[in-house]
Image 1 (cartoon, one colour):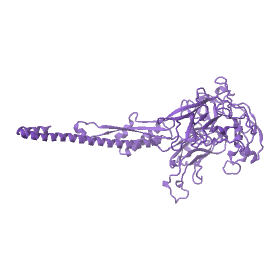
Image 2: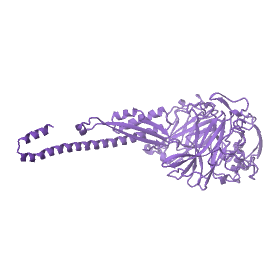
Image 3: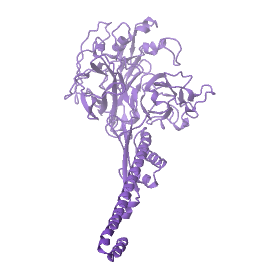
Image 4: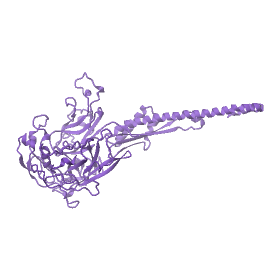
Length: 636
């Protein structure tokens, strides 16, 4: 303003014509002021945009770094650790302290899990940016830049649901859940409603993998013994399998009684698995010692697999004095798939079956599923009440689906699952099944098989008849045709054998070389014995394997005595193996020293199945929980 006044004073004494000529100086001065303001504004705006890009890049890196900390599970502890790591990455990317402190704002850090089990981690930060030229025109406040990012990781692993699930043979183990009224100390950490790990209703989730080259248009899903009803009969004729009699030279027939054979019970409340004697002709407990392979013979004749128990919402959990059907567990099996709805995964329910308990009050137990493989609502292709020498005849089993189900447990891939989400890399698709204990206190043992209906033609439904049929090379094929059933993250197990067996756990692709697998067991007791060895079936064990709980310090650096040690002190009853076993996947050769013989850092990795060699207790109900750090990715 002083400049303009001076100019006016100088012009006031000049002649009129000179004064008119001098007006250009005023216009130029005014224009310069405007140009300087616009130039300053442009510089400040450019500076703000540059700071915004810098903040977005830092926030993206912070989200990607933080989400991997949530792999063991989302809880206040892991979320706090994720926040700390995110703050460290903001600092490492040149962000001032004020940006890191803004993470404390309400709603700036949160994590969710999608219906598919994907962990989403969202982070927001604010940067108060100072301006320069904008202050000259009276804008003295800082410009608060706020940027957000969401990173995701799929940490839950697909755990093989069974050693023999592809063929539908029941042998060394089965799956099992307890009712919501029981105590977690019976071996199920999640189903009891008073669980400290998952209070309220909980569903075990499974993915049924359908390969891209599946040559059939229908997937038949079969459930073994989906109800928790136990038969009372104890005396049984034991028929032996094909290889046990033809190669192992065992007698074809034997008779045994629950309660007199080793480790079996004549009580209807208890399971009963009669040993067939066929394990005498298989490889010894230490693998590779002569004889037949365990998977070629039938170790047990299955009579009962459920446990009749009673409880009162987790307290006073006992075995009743007599078989009590009112304590049996009703279990819901819900089939569904995910449809692509404009880029959003939408769950579409297909069919459900709610198991019976046989108490005459909640139901009348007329489905007759005890010790049988059934496909609810799916027709009459489960044959033969007894092993009949191969005729394939017998009374068909009719098991209805729940009212309101859109389909049966046979899913037509052409008509029943429109818009099903497929893996963009492989073309594979998935059908999902949730298993939920809805009432009762007993253990419900079960299994899942899925495959083409054609491969169930003429195959018996009764478990022992099916075992003999599938193990006989002269009988009809019962292959799943590449379909595999996986438990997602958590697998509830019941061990049927008391000797060590190889348990395939998860498939790990080569892209995960150098990442970490977290493995924990819940409540491994009842005769479970350390150590436990992990190896990949694609790598010779002499080149790479990790043995835990063998005394001293475990391979992940944790003192062995700081974890519960199965049958040793402290016992693992009602406990998780904590911290989980950390297994670094081989294949990261950056630290390899080829001068050191058998250096584990030099082992290449091309993918393979992680397998556990482990001696579980016979009739021990326990759980596997497995997560993988994985590769995080940005969602937005």
